[in-house]
Length: 485
Ligand code: TRP
Ligand code: ZN
Image 1 (cartoon, rainbow, N blue to C red):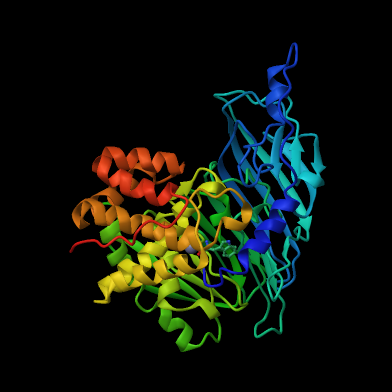
Image 2: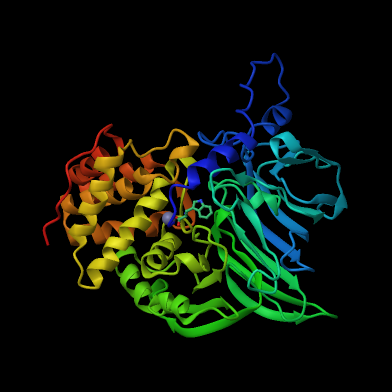
């Protein structure tokens, strides 16, 4: 992220639009368990209305048609593969999108209703979904997605589905920019990072346009006056990390990089809007080297592909899975390495709640220091700059308690210094081994800050855990850590 001052406002607005906390459960005399469970959300400490307790979406098969790129309109058909960890008489998906035109449960039409104030699509299956069962839920919809605006952003920032009108330096474009909870403006989801899923994404566009999405690209299907691009995201990711892009793109392939598990090749492709300046493209010339440096510290790259999709509006960059979304304005090496690091921390290893989002931002920010060192630069000077920012601007314990904190300086710079403190306490070799073990243990999963501390104890012992814990918990600013080399 490059513009940290703009985000708290959008998050506060998003929190307002997400509705209030769920009603506390009442002790009923004879509660039918299926309906008692049905209305419960995931009770996220920051966004309490998101998600459904007991719902496990395993896979989203998404088909989007963008008939007029650059306009907000889209039509969609998504089939969710659902499981339950408790009996569900209703499925309550987050959705604030276009008008729903059809809902099917295992292929049969099913009753549904919208709860717009809670941004929910509620579907009633013919019989409760029970633990151990799997169901396919299809939702079809058409129209304009819901809008969540950030009042503090100089050009209004909407979360989720973006439209860049034709004529603004291009032929019209659309893309997703969803963290934390914009994906449900264009896709019905269990919109919470604790319920990660795999995705198949099919995007149908007019001739001359190219679609890109998270995952590996499959065959392009030529229709009558349309082209459909298909992408498979085979490893689970949080819903906010799904990238979908439509533009007049140039797709630039680069040689695969052998940094996957057991040296498996990682596909390299970048998408540049036609006419992208060389000065923008050059920020991505060293992606191969970045992949090698970061996988040296973090462990194997967690996905089958990496690259960027460049967008023209002046928005913050986002770590969309396998395909970071990079505004022209943020096309520099520092942001490039930050978003790449998020592929491990955020996309593969995800926070269990939004209060734990420093687990994304602190680790991705620390990658900036590691990259500086790999260039022969002074990492301790980077740490000292972060420290000065916190000493001047104030700081807080790392677990967030309100939406305005999610992407603040403490999440980024204090989160990064927590890792610097761990490194100083245990040394480079143990720090590197810890990072490898952490990604191996939690890739494909979601964890809390408490889980991190427990894991640190088992990996590096009490001294390392204590160094980390001081930076996680202390109300003030601990002393600047200085690792020995
Ligand atoms: N995770 C982003 C980063 O630091 C920052 C971010 C948070 C963001 N919410 C966003 C970017 C919404 C774009 C849209 O890299
Ligand atoms: Zn970040």
